[in-house]
Amino acid sequence: MTAAAERGTTTVTGRAVRRIAERAAYEAPPGAGAVRATRSAVSVRGRRARVALRVTLPYPVPLAETVRGVREHVAARTGELSGLDVARARIEVTALSPVGPAPAPAGAKPSGAGRAPRRLWSARRFPVAVLTASAAVVCALLAADLVLVRAGGRPAAAWRVRAVDWLAAHGPGDPSVLAAGVLTGLLGLVAVVLAVTPGLRGRATVRTPAPRVTAAVDRGAVE
Image (cartoon, rainbow, N blue to C red; front, top):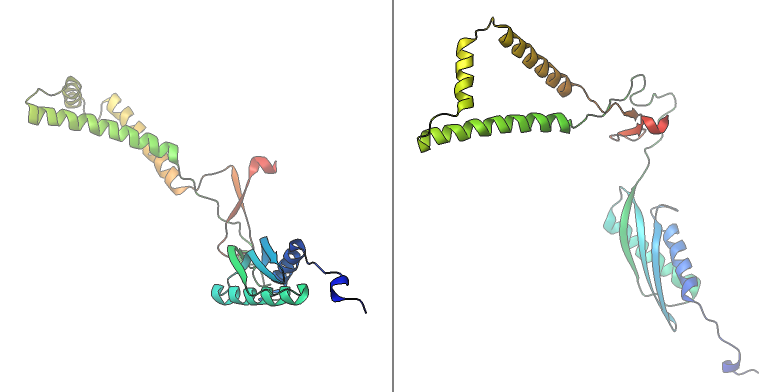
């Protein structure tokens, strides 16, 4: 009979154990393919192995219960297939992947069918910045002049004196006053239009089957 030392040895490499652990995670509850291993590390020393996995879990699931089930399944399954002693597997959750919506019943119309999805609203940063900067400059000049007159005893600035004299000499029927009023009204109308319209005409919104999800495509890219 051949001595035990001369019969040879069987070595299970860390790479093989890593593949087994990744497949075990794929088979773990809550269902085949629900858990995906994104990165794995295995250390094999003699008959013992340490397994560490980074996984993506489906959403929504109870995290504590799901991670415990994945850890137990990976440790048991890896030890069973590799023949090594896997006391415990370390699981790190790196991402949650939303589960797709349930299929609609037969004959049911999709949500939002028959009407176009709402367009995205623009932040209107440039018009707001111009309006805010203009108002800030005018208010700052007027406030500075008032402070100098009241606190410093200086005479009013020449531009404010000329503005008051001009307004005193020109009534509502003056052409220049009418022109200024029309211009102010047009600027106000433009501001109202910008406030009540969505904008972002370069992007077209599209329907999505997922609830509370807004999607848009760039019109230039589509063209």
